[in-house]
Amino acid sequence: MLSDKRTYLATASSVVVEGRRIGRVCIMRDVTHFKELDSLKSEFVATVSHDLRSPLTLMRGYATMLDTVGELNEQQQGYVKKIISGVENMSRLVNNLLDLGRIEIGVGLQVEHVTVLDIIERVTSAVQLQAAQKNIALNVELPKDMPHAVEADQALLHQALYNLVENAVKYTPENGRVFIRTISQPDYLIFAIEDSGIGITPEDIPHLFEKFYRGKQREARSQPGSGLGLAIVHSIAESHRGRVWVESAIGKGSTFYLQIPLTQPKEFKSISS
Ligand code: ADP
Image 1 (cartoon, protein in one colour):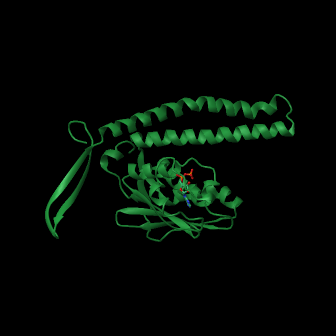
Image 2 (cartoon, rainbow, N blue to C red; image 1 turned 180 degrees about the vertical axis):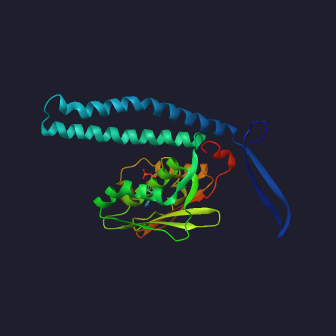
């Protein structure tokens, strides 16, 4: 963005004539309008999702209370179950949208010392049940030289890791394996989540971290989801000045890497300590 408050997309390339470079061309495209549209869209989504929360809570509440005011027959109980599961899916979507909006505007990054072992344990115990139901072994392998803690927003880092581990379990068939590892680098810690699952096609990989993108494979589509989980991980990685990427082979499995700096800039830290 320049001082006139307009946003440009700049690209530069060399001009080569008969093998000799005779200069460079820089093209600047004014994308202000698209930026404005993007922020309007985010604002709209945040408002709508916020307003959807109360009616959803109400619907869930009354649906669960139905059998306390009179006996329900088996068919009615089945219908109530379907209503509750539909409402729960919608609530998850709405919460994801709200989280994403909050992370994107960058409010509330509460930086503190997050103990790496603790956060991994919390994530694994949260997905343990789902893994056990599919007989998937969750293995944690941590190197001896792993740093004790990283500076991060505890809740956000937990959510990013949770989304990655939950996906690993979700997209791995029964009796598979999931490994959670860390890789130490001088200024970063990398969390590597490896699964023996369905894998991701090369066509899907460039789009995975986009909002609402879902893989095109049939096995992936058969799982419930909104396509927001990885977009949230991407936003969380960026808000910590980190990165997320994936390596995958169809039918063999995938490894997602989340790289987080060990320390955060001073202006981030003033919020908590
Ligand atoms: P959702 O799981 O709700 O579809 P995500 O944003 O979490 O949304 O993931 C986007 C897509 O990436 C999924 O639809 C799936 O195709 C693919 N994906 C994510 N994680 C994995 C994984 N561990 N193995 C295979 N495919 C994956």
